Image 1 (spheres, one colour):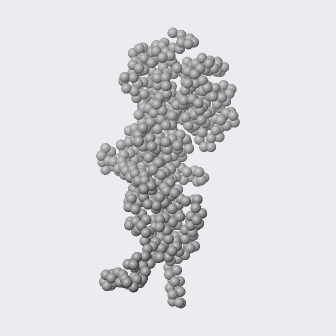
Image 2: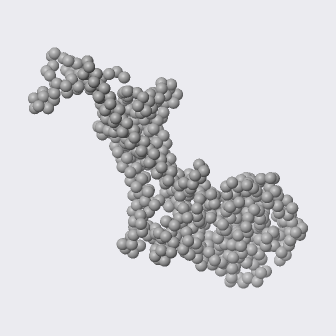
Image 3: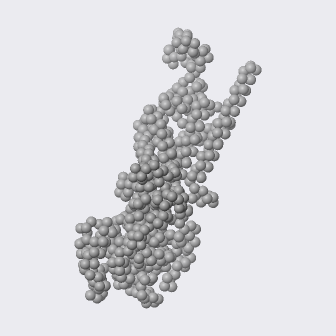
Length: 259
Length: 368
């Protein structure tokens, strides 16, 4: 460790946080605490940008999708020619769907060129025995059977599993069925039809594709509830930062114990 | 001209024999070109083909079905198409429409197959049930599936008329006790063109036959094997009530003010957005109307498995797999509710546990 580090008591170094101390802010306890804090850079800016754009797109897609399936009460504020309520809702849905699709492909690209942690979303190491043991450990932590969680740089094994099934597989499913439904409007031979038209044939009947796309929305909603709860809960109860990590990209550990 | 071996009459010959004038013949050609979505330059091509090409014989067989396809077909709005095409094909074999019956009819069937080996088109109305060796549908003393395979062996191409032949329709609805099976799952080595609908629109049927007879090839098909010119767009895409859909103006209940104004039937479970057919352009009964125009939503009769998609008045399929009637929203809301309640409970326990640990830690500190 460098000589000018504050992580070890260093007789040659002045007491840290001079300005803060002398303005009546930092206490002696605070200074002890910052000596044990460590941090690591995890999420590069494309990953963070994708996360928030994706979250916004999903919110728009859920609401607009809901109103496409169950439209608002009929409105009669103008002649049908000048009124475009469903049109705007559908436009929002399609536009958000396009952004989500482009973002998802961008995220896949970043898994190849980004850092090690950018790949975690796209696989689960089922072949590792230790990984399964840690899944069980995380389950026990959530079942209140463990006193203290372990430290992880990226996702813990349980979170990685959830991410893989809900996001990687879930978004793939929604993008495919969504583009298949979009191709119904753009017509045969269109770009949407050539990339996703086969999904309609696979299910046989467009109504089934509508129904499973609708169920997929609830799958994503369930994920959102779990994801937001877990992120906030772990931010408070675990030994590392969660929410701010997706803003700054830096994971901060609250203690300097090894595991 | 007589119909002798090796020299089959042309369409034009048949038409003239039926007393149709040249002028009417040309009208028929231009109307057919329009119906098929072809440019005016195709009119002389159609006329030329019909004048010079020997007509293609058609054998029309009936399996497990209600004959609504035939009923629709003989009501084709374009009288010439009906008269000409029907007279041309009934010359060969159609056990429902032909004059002959019994052994004479079956003899005509065999004779047609023998005479036009590899040249005739097989039109199938209805489908073969495969359970109990096909005993659920006997025609001419034999299971229909045998007759179908026999007739298909030497056919040039096969037309699957209606939802029965194309997808199975009501007799193939769950649990499908007779194992009624669409034609393309029984005959796998012939080009098959599906013309679904319960029944298909008359003009669509005559249009498809005319195209095949005139150009001697299958019309362009979509991914599901349906003629693209009639089935490439949804009812919804060409519906005259579509502006009300885009505007967000819906019929909310049957017979409400909006229904009288002719607003969109989307909320009443209209399946126009999931159904591929030409009803909203060609319409029915000489173009008089179609279901949506008469104030009722589309039931999606030309879609695969339309009997198994739940109520005719729901746009989201019921999930009956678990033995409980539920739709996607009910399942989704229940799942989100359970997860939400679980999260709330988990959060409460987390807070209590944390508080409890703090108290214990403080006690330990005090004791120490």
